[in-house]
Image (cartoon, rainbow, N blue to C red; front, side, top):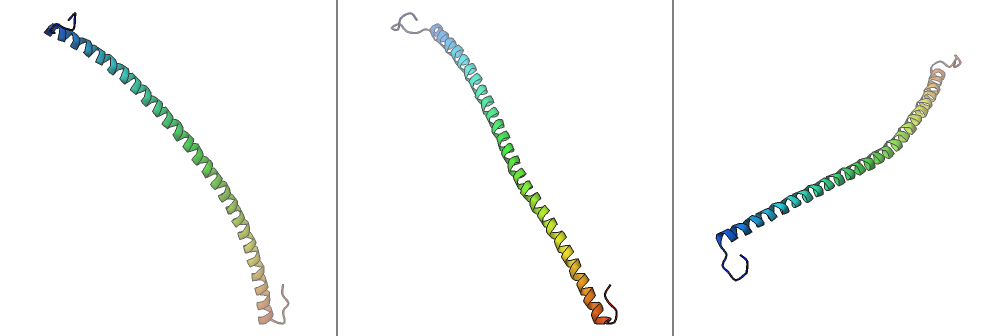
Length: 108
């Protein structure tokens, strides 16, 4: 198939087909290599993004737990104050009951 005006033979077509198959195989190999590289890059990007998200979530939870710890500490302090106040009120009620039921005995 030297010039473009002569009819192609089966041998000419076979040669062209062989070259085309070789080029297609080479293109497939390069495409597969590029595709694998892109997938690997995407995978690394997704992993990095997931780690960033994990870090942000941990920071958010830390902030929440710190404020929650402060709130619990405040509630515990308030609870202690309320228990003390109730104890004082109970003492006063007991003193009043003694005065009402036993007016002759002084409170202890």
